Each structure stands twice: as C-alpha cells, then as structure tokens.
Amino acid sequence: MNTEPGRVTLGQLFRGFCLIGLSGFGGVMPWARRYLVERYRWLSPAEFATLLGLCQVMPGPNVMNLAITIGARFQGWRGALVAPLGMMLAPMLIVLAFGLAYLHYGELAPVRAMLRGISAVGAGLILATGLKMLFDYRRQAVAMALVALIFGAVAWLRLPLLPVVALLLPAGILVALLGRR
Amino acid sequence: MPTLGELVLHFALLSLLAFGGGNATLPEMHRLVVEQNHWMSSATFSELFAVAQAAPGPNVLVVSLIGLHLAGIPGFLAVTAAFCLPSSVLMYGFSHWWVRAGDAPWRQAVQAAVGPMAVGLVLASGWLMAGTVAWPGQYLLLLLVAATVGLVLILPWNPLWWIAAGALLGLGGFV
Image: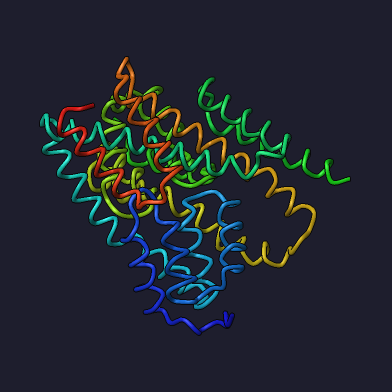
C-alpha cells in the first residue's frame, strides 16, 4: 500500500480522526481499524497491525499514540499534531458538557441510578477487553506469570504503579532476553 | 483540594506509566485521588467513570473528568494535557527508532514484557472498577458486571448497546 508522505493531507487527517474519535463508545480502537484500513485505505491490514503493536508497547492513550504515528507518517510534525487534536476536540467538548451537567444534576436520584448501571457495564467492558488480551497469551507460561504478578501487585496488594512498573518491566525484558538464548 | 500544579505533576507521571492505555491507569488514579488523598469519594469516582463511558471518544476522557471535578475547567484542560503530552512526545520521538529496529532482539524483548504487563493492568482495572461499583454488597451490580463480560465475549455488538442497557437497568431500578 502507498504510504508515501503527503498522500494524506492535513485536512483529511483532521476530518478522518475526528470521525474516529466520535464513533466509539467505550473506546475507539476497533473503529480506528475500520476507518483507517477498510474505509480510507490509508494503511494495509499488516501496517495497521505493526503500528498497533508499537502503540501498545508505548505508555499513554493507545489511540492517541496511533493518531500521532499516522499523522507523523503522512505529514511530519504537523500531522502528529493535527491527527490527535482532530480526534480529541469534539469528544472533549461533549465530555465537558456531560461533566458540567453531572456537577449540577449528579445528586438527582434518576441520574445516580443511571450512572450506577453504566458503571457496572463499564467495568464489565474493561474486564472483557482484558480477558480477550489474556487469551492471546494462553500458551505462554512466562507471560501468564507476568500478568499474574502485575494483577496481584495492583489489584490485590494495591501497590503504587511506579515501583511496580520500575521493577517488573526490566525484569520482564531480562527474562525475555535470557529466554531467547 | 489539590493545586493545579500538583495535579499536573501527578498526571504527567501517570502518562508515562499508562501501559495498556487510559483505562489501565484507573487503579492508580483511584489510589491517588480516593485512597491516598481523599480528594473525592469512591462513589464519585465510579460515577465520573460512568459519565465518561456515556460519552463517545477515547477512554482517556475519564482523566479529563477527574480534572474537571477537582479543579473546574482549568483542571479539565490541565489534567488532560498533563496526561496526554508526555506519552505523546515520547511516542513521537520513539516511533522512527522502533520501526528502524526491525526484528532486533531488544525490541522483541520489550514487546514480550510490555504486552503481558498491559494485560495485567487492564484486568486489574476492570477488577477494581467492579469492586468500586459493587462495594459493599451490591450483588445485582456484580451480576450486571459478570453478564456484561459474558455477553461482550459472545456477541460482537457495539458496546453502545450494553452501555444503554446498563443505563436503562439503572433507571428502571433493577440494579
């Protein structure tokens, strides 16, 4: 697929990521694939998979990382600014309106009841995402052990994230390097 | 209540620890704003989480809402920027390097370590939110969490429908 710089303009990047940002509830990553690969054909399926791998290795919001890499690929630093801005602008305004409404009406019983139901579904959506991710590692004992260690440290022991990452990330990299020999 | 500078510092650090994306940092944010500093109640935290779920857009927006609740519109903007900028700058600087590394052993080792770490963090996040939502003794809400997990894994529907169903179940007084 043709990924030469300049093939996708700044305006196209802004509009494209604007639509991606607005189309998803409970995360927009599945929609990013649908738009970028199938509808706009900016990336081939293989390219999308490679970039997704990179965005998941780096810390930070995954779709924002994706917008930055794709923006940079087609339009350099300008694209790396325009694509994530396009994705965030409208959802931020909407969530700001929702947030302000919550500050004013959050005490009302029907609002609280509705949010209670949504928060339970939201927790379920995250757990389902985690289980889908876990499924890919089902035959890898070392990876499963690392998942269990992180989960135990954060969910059960409630340890601060900084020491957990600072300890387990280098340990995981070391084990992976030693395992290759 | 925290100062804006304090918030920016905390969330800028969190940005660099956010393996697995915005939602994966919910346990650390809960630890920071609820357990350690008592800036908001656990119930408010899960309500803000729900408000973010009800809006379209990337998962990271829950961070913006926490900023809004703690420091108004300046907090909304400052916390969003603090959470997005450090990781974005890192990403921009790092991506060329990563593509050039090809199949280098160190790159595969980093991938082999970060992948499972993200999975563990996302699972911990879902676990903590389920606990926050259903604590104490809200067994019907726990049932709704479990039903959502089961349905999402079986049916490839748009999550919007599950969120709407959750809203209706709550509104109808079923959970």
